[in-house]
Image (cartoon, rainbow, N blue to C red; front, side):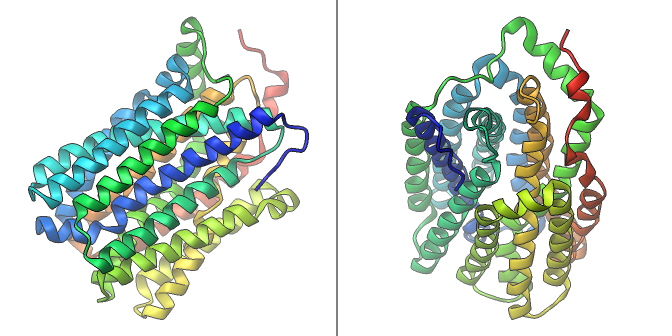
Length: 400
């Protein structure tokens, strides 16, 4: 975990609180996906219908990310995080009720939509806040922040596997997780420092519009798009792919997802020195190669031990691209909030919206081959890796 010996105690508390919020965000996504086989069984759905159900969450996410950058600049990242986390946690609880109590796919879709509304804005605001924190600590902590997101997914996957093994009803599992998630963010937000991401009303619109027109910023977002899909697809489909494609149990599927997120977590927390030595571009290219190999072996290896090894390689490959792209987007303090908002919007759009589309593809060609198709976008991320080198034009640029 990056530390700053010169940082004031209030800044350290702010950093720790932000890490707790990232962990809670990981709990949210893993609580849902680790019990996805149980959701499918409770509602009696096939793969294509599960994909359509998840598209409800994606629809909320896309609506949210389309305005999240503007919301962050109007309200401040901290306020957006509080509001969005509360909406997300409450929606998770209601997903459990609508699925486990009423068995209603329609109601589940509605609450997945509202969960998407909250989670997308929460994640965009978290990355903007992370960029502000890097300024306050004068060192890069984005990989560590995303590492705590991954820790949350590991914990959530473990709890999901335990709940599945015990046969804990969805409504009780999601109630507990929703309360933990909301409580963590609301409590930790007391320690947030000054929110430098907030911009006066008269300048927020033009600044965000300008960021969307910057070719390098958009290319950073497209780079993240491919690798975010590689991460999001694993989150939504690995447990189900192991259960159905490899003929394992629900609990084994949840363990497989836990293996993936554990590999991501360790990579994010232990790669700091390697990033300093090799730089962003080389690290992203190496990550893309690992993700490419892991995805293809998992999709076409047809051997359970090999599939678990592939999940490790896949997790290592998917770990660093998102946080490194966030750091690249925040290189210039003057433009960091708007650029991080743009890259986060594109990345989380792919993270949340792409995996459900894979469900529709799975209905036509099968789930494992559909996951294999992700390799095409991973190649695109490899090709765009040079865009993380920085913004050399910023040294000569002024903001009129």
